[in-house]
Image (cartoon, rainbow over all chains, first blue to last red; front, side, top):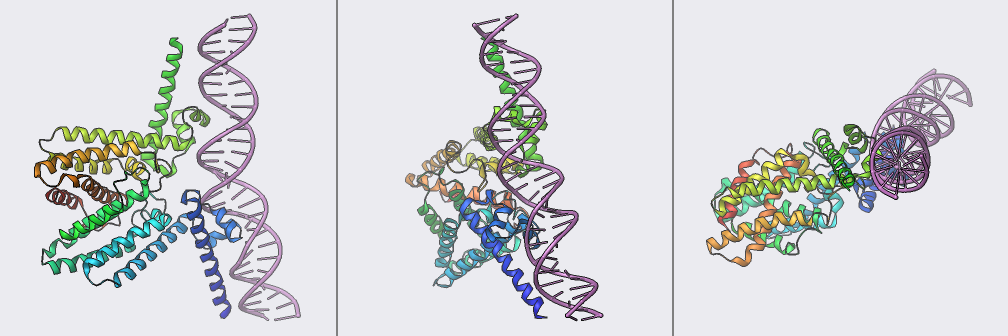
Length: 198
Length: 198
DNA sequence: TAACTTTGCTAACACTGTTAGGTAAATTAT
DNA sequence: ATAATTTACCTAACAGTGTTAGCAAAGTTA
């Protein structure tokens, strides 16, 4: 019986190797030039072996983008837990989001890429929702604190999320096209302004 | 001498045919599955002919995305010219932007795709800037009207643009992942709120 | 009419994702 | 321990990709 267990473990090891190699290749050469044969080369197996572990290339990219979400959510939770007030929590969330995008462009592009071959419509509902839920909870707390209209929490979550994500997307996707006046301080000021008007 | 002119005209015709065919294919099957051979097939030429008109595939996608910008800017100018006040201009701009994204998803994905093979960093500075300039001018007018701080116009342009683009990107990229509470009325309310706080 | 340029083709190269089929090794059953 | 069976892994191949080289025919100019 333990033979089967060992085999499963070994399979898991190769699976991890595939993901690790793929991520490394994406980081070095961009996701456009990622190929099954390059992954196979990196893990020192022949190409078809990869199909024993993943249905297709898209499934690999999908799993990587899910890992990205896990990492981002973990970073956010860590950052939030250190804060003393909901307002500081919201600031810490934005800071973490921005730093994640900046330091992990490959992940970010896979996770939020418009028209990405993997992780398209309807595949990221849970990961996507988790992020939105965190924002929602913090905003609710601030609204309670400020005693403004609690019913607007939902709308405000979307508005907040739109602004933060829009800023980050523009910066990551088009860094060279963006005027110098659009920099991180704009993001900071945006958060301050949004909190003021919650 | 007029022979050369005719030849240039004929070249232009084929060039246009390539772009048209490519755009049609992108609209029908998505940009991922666009291929030189498919374009060649559509225009009833052999594949290498395309390289007499474009350096490579990326150049075709680049030109298409530029056409997209031209169309979007033209739509915006048309919509703005019909408005009576800067506030209505801003609303019309957002409305046009949103409708453009909705009706021309292919264009939008090419124009603003995070990590798109074409139109990456540094290639869209002018088109990108033109859009931002329009927003800037309207916002300045509103600020003058409201007699608030004119120096904040630049920051507010970025913040506005971030929010609008973020909302649209999320909707276009992830329509199936987005909760039902995030709909066009959120966009409307966002614009109203932003104008209020300019 | 001869020389030259342009046009457009086929064939090919080096890739891509993916599948079929076979072989040798590892595991299980007898 | 031997036979049967499953698993692991490979090579070869298919159909497709972007792109280039080289050639033949047509069009243009001298």
